[in-house]
Length: 113
Image 1 (cartoon, rainbow, N blue to C red):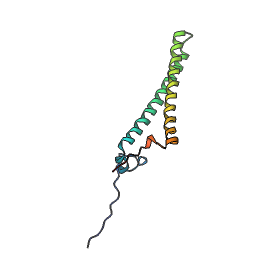
Image 2 (cartoon, rainbow, N blue to C red):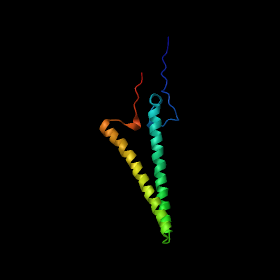
Image 3 (cartoon, rainbow, N blue to C red):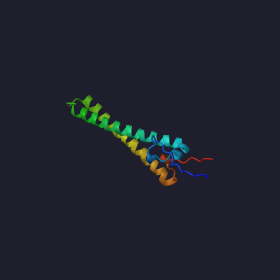
Image 4 (cartoon, helix red, strand yellow):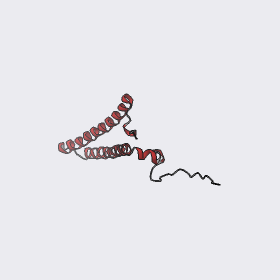
């Protein structure tokens, strides 16, 4: 007599539960990496934005009325705000593509055979 034994499903501890199962990730590796790359760029860009705003603010306070130092500080703050606009635009563009065309770039589905 053959006894059937059901094994527990395999899980990979390197993949977070929120990212799905191993089978889902292996069917769609490019979409997973694109989403990770975008989120990494947004996080690094946000940290850079914060650093440049603080640096520009400190330079503005320390300019002591010198026009050149004030101009450099203002330039840092303007460039940081421009970077914030780029980050917001990338997020809005991704959400717009999802709303209009139903194309969720952060969760791509590739056809599999």
